[in-house]
Image 1 (tube, one colour):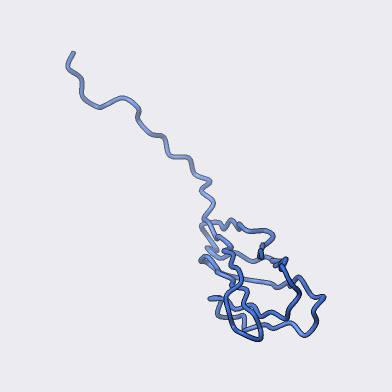
Image 2: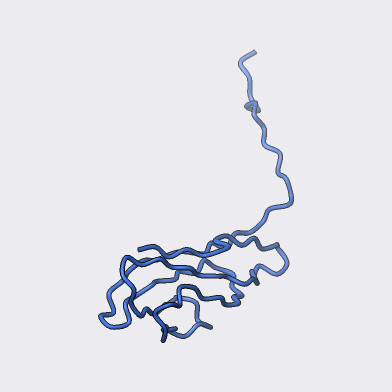
Length: 106
């Protein structure tokens, strides 16, 4: 059993600090069953499939922090798989680092 998210990484800039994108969740199960997806993303309510052939879900997200998605069985509520979409701040300003110590014995 596997749950994947595409894309699984979103870069934000320093001004907005929020990532806005469309995420597609795909799952593969050992045996066909109805599933639900729950998330710590506040704007997404619990989603459940009504068709055994449904194996993906697309949704728009806007967040400034990582989002965890969990695939659970609709009948037993057992956790089947999980995936995390990482939200990372893109650093465009390069910081130079000194490689030499500021002191010397000589």
